[in-house]
Length: 124
Image (tube, helix red, strand yellow):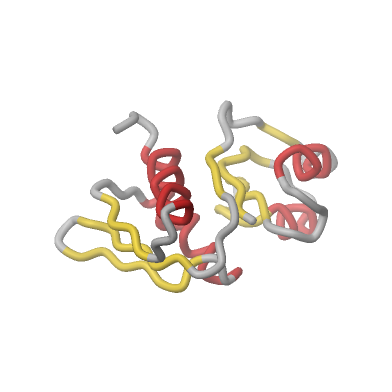
């Protein structure tokens, strides 16, 4: 168990995908991880997630890759494309989660609103 709950949760999700399992139970949760999972559910990478008795159960839908971005780079809206090219396999495949002053959102939404922030994770 690492100190970073987001990185640990996303790594356990990827380990479940590699083991051909579509359900993973996480012992630790945070509001930030739940926000990332909410975005992943909207985009169709996570089928469902729920918190019961202090444990987070995640049902994985069509996830090919996800990882936390470390260090958490602080970027402007113009610099986001550089990191999209670095972390995602193609321009329109997947998303990067950005923590902005207006909340947590995908990189597309941050570019549309022309705001920057801190890069948290990516999924495709």
